[in-house]
Image 1 (cartoon, one colour):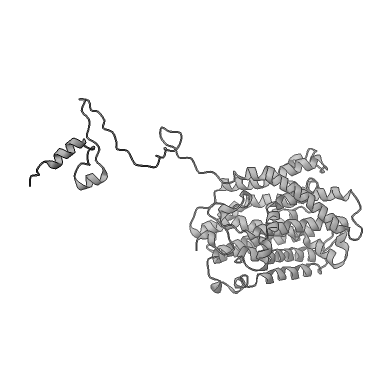
Image 2 (cartoon, rainbow, N blue to C red; image 1 turned 90 degrees about the vertical axis):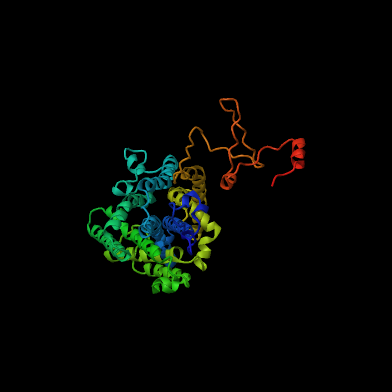
Length: 460
């Protein structure tokens, strides 16, 4: 089976530029649907929070925990971006070119964010963008300062974490290439880094001073590490028949819906550990750390059928559905535009009355999706065509383009070239004639000479 015909994968050449993987790597089309669910869950939790719905019983507790969409985004990034490095190491190919990797990431992230930040700063207005701190927002440094993290596009703190992960990933891949012997060592190293990230969150939460480290790559790397671990498992076992895989991986293919059921059970469990649902959001040490771990487990259980499955079952049907796949295509724009629009639409009327939460959410969804689609088709997609370098054009000596192709038909015989003494040179011998050791036939004789030659007696 060829690399791009693995179960659950698709031909990268058929993917849009925004979703096309690096050359030589398969595409996981069901992950597009995961992006849609991640963006919509973040949108819903924000509208539920601002409308007060998060404080309404069990359903409100569920919508409050839909911020797990950020975790799902991080798991997706860890899986998709780290897998090409792991596959190159396993197959003995060169690592992805670092300069091209950064160009792909910059074209994917920077133009859409700068566009949204500039337009939204003009209307409806964003805190801090028109001040002397503008460079912190345009430079993806928003999550490094307590004074900045609440300004600009508030939800973009997680985008700044993504950028920090992009910078760290080539170094992590280089470390794995030189110091880790195999998949087991790699999984152990990722587990150690995840525990270190958990320790950072615990230490910063215990410190009474304002916390910014929890919102950086140092405090959230555990979620990226989960996606990176799935990438290692995918490369190691994707070509192996299902019957020969470990027990946990064998359960992914026949029962993909069970993994979504597990994710739902973890969601219910998360609502019962005492995490806050309304403002002010005050966490104690237990729910701060336990919630971080449960969010990671919830995102992994939801993502596994798309990353390690064979493309069959109810989850695959839902994620492959065209509206869901299209929302995944523009999900980055939905994430960027929805939060400022949520705040602006809140000023239109009071959405805290019973039943208005659904209307409020639909209004934000329509407005954010329209802005996201315009951003994608007018700005993102034209620029994303430059993600992969084009092959160099063939340099023909003495010509600016390819050699002309002769028109179909009977090939003409080459003409005799005059020599210096005025005689005609011999016609070049054909390949078949040279092989037989004789000259090729000459031009047709006049009809009278042919008749005389045919009538002349032949010598034996």
